[in-house]
Image 1 (cartoon, helix red, strand yellow):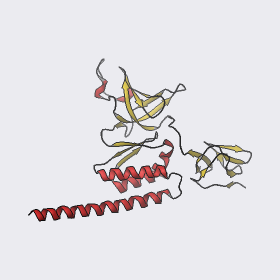
Image 2 (cartoon, helix red, strand yellow):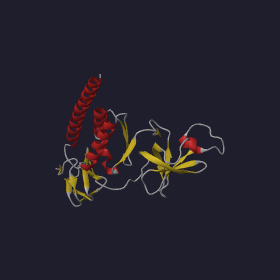
Image 3 (cartoon, helix red, strand yellow):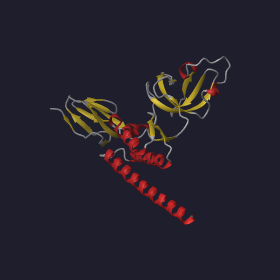
Image 4 (cartoon, one colour):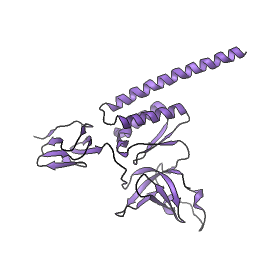
Length: 250
């Protein structure tokens, strides 16, 4: 009879026995040894149906096809842009994949993207030679002209997003911020309220710090609700002070 010996999101180390029996299937970071599934790396257990894998607690970003990432435009040639996606090699964004507009021969590409621009882009291919092809053609892919980017370990992004987007949706709801988590560990936050921008940032950094903790969603919810109440109280006090000063001047 098969038996799961660990809990979902439990921290494990190499050599830990995760499951016994043939009903469970080993995936990334695990290995089958006869009728046992063994952890091969330090990380969080992820159980999806019968499949068991390990999500690394650390590690650099490794680009994959269909990843949506946040990149920094670093340079350009006459027909493409180089984009830093947080990997050892820059991605390449060709004219064809950057825009549907007709561009005259010899025209300056800087009117579309220039060095330092931040873009939300998608990886269309990664070759054996580690060449990374990018596209701007797809829902939500665009230049990010406002807001800021917070960087966390790429392995923590699934915890920021949560199951079916539950965690990131909660942060958006509590703060009113626009947030997008790139799979390369770069998270874009945009708000017209600096205090809410900071609150969303603090929540994301707290998730990174506590990624291994059980009950993380409840912890973050409590953190956000407490901070929102404190901010509301402070704003009320500030308004009262302003009104008091106005009356004194009259």
